[in-house]
Structure formats: C-alpha cells, structure tokens
Image (cartoon, rainbow, N blue to C red):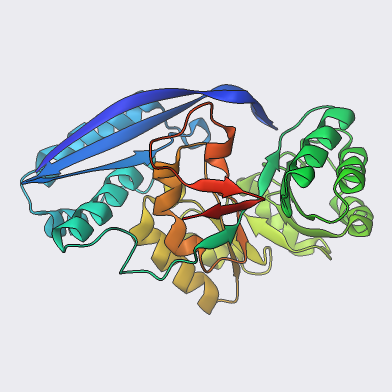
Length: 321
C-alpha cells in the first residue's frame, strides 16, 4: 500500500468571514492511496484553531505511513484509530473507507449506508455589515435555500439577525458565534433572539468557558462545535448543550464520527453534521452522518471557485447525489 499526501489551494468565490477572520482561499490536504489495482482519495482541511496547518498535517501523514503502508487496508484502518484525532487521520480514514469498498466490489458509501438522495443543507451567511448580510440571506432564499447558517461575532448581533430574518422570512435559521460571545450578557441576548424564530445557536462561548452555559437560561437550543471533537468529550457537555456538531476533521474520520453519533444519541443529544471549507470529496465522506442528522451544514463546495470532478450537486438549498 502506498500513501501520498499533497496540498491543494482553492480560491473562494467570495471572502468567507467568521469571528476569527476572513479567508479568500481554502487550503486542503488530499491523500491518495494505491493498493494493487485500486486507487482512492481522501481530503481534509487543517484548522489553525486546533493547532493544525497544511504542513503539519502532511508531516503527520508521512510519519504514520511508515507503519500503515506495511499493512493491508483492513489492518491499516484498525491501526489508524490509535492515531490522534484531527484532520490528518480524517483524510486517511475516509480514503480507506473508499478503498475497502472498492476491494469488496462496491462504491462508498453504498452498500454500507442507506443515503437519502436529497439532503437539506444550510447555506452560510458570512459576517459583514447589516446590509450585506441581509443581501446574502435574500439571495440564498431567492435561490431556493430553506436553511441558513448565520455567522456572527459580538457586534450588532440583534441588528444582523433581524435583518437576515426580514430578508429570508420563510427560512429556518441557525446562528454560529464561533466562541465570540464571552463579553455579552447571554441571558439577555438569548431572550431577545427568541423573537426571530431561531432554530439553534452554535458555540456561543470558548470551549474552555463552557461551564457558564449550565447557569444560563437558553430557550433556544445550543450546539457544541469547538467543544466536541470525539465521543470522550460528551460527558462534559451534558446540561450545557442540547446538540453536537460532528465534523470529520475534528473526529479524525468517519469511523470515530459514527461512534460519536451513536453515543451522543444515547445520551439524548441531537446531531448536526458540519464541515470545514472543502470540496465534494470531503462532503461525500460525511453523508452517512448527514442522512440521519437533524441539521446538515455541508455547503463547503458552494463557496469554492472550483469543485472536484463528479462532485455533489447543490440545488434549491439541497445537496443531491
């Protein structure tokens, strides 16, 4: 078995702005695995918030490959789970799912998973001034979107949410603060947001400050993103969140993501599946979780200037196989 990791930089259609800053390019790592007559790919997006870079992820994969390449794909997949969770493990794990499927005469994700042919996905409204965010929301709604994910920092939260709601009155709306609301009065803010029919609020506080949420009344359900990577984090979230956001780049691949989903539901959490910026190669790997999730946010390819060949189709706020 041969494993190779290469960097790819993809220009975005427009700048993508969240509370931590703006991006104009999506920088991913793609893993190619050759085994006998088969060749497959996986993709991950290194995330600086978690101490990752394209260079560090490639170095991790090169280091692991010394052992993985000596094994058959089944044993390599098992050994991989002893590696640290994160983007590097995700790319290799997802490639191995595809490889094993091909070896068994199939194509991932079928027949292992029964995937819905049409899945509603959030379309992301990135941070801007009130007018530009309203325009983004209106444009998405006019294109047929039914679910909007609104990125926010700590500035003009109510004004921006009100403008988005007015621009897209029929859309389901979720909010994502990306840990930016530490200095805000959450009790007051959450109460004020209820008038805008918000379905969920994602990660209002930094992950190391989650304990505050246990003492805050939140009539709108809260979803853990940065605070939830793998199944071992779930016990810390009870009483603070009602939902978790599963991202394969956090879990370190689909294998751990499936375990996280199962244990989360046992504990009473609802499930969202999300993504970093990435191509359809990365989104396809998350479909087994997406087909069952209450909320899906897999619009990464929509934001790219160019997707991979044979990518997912996005139409009227849905992704389609």
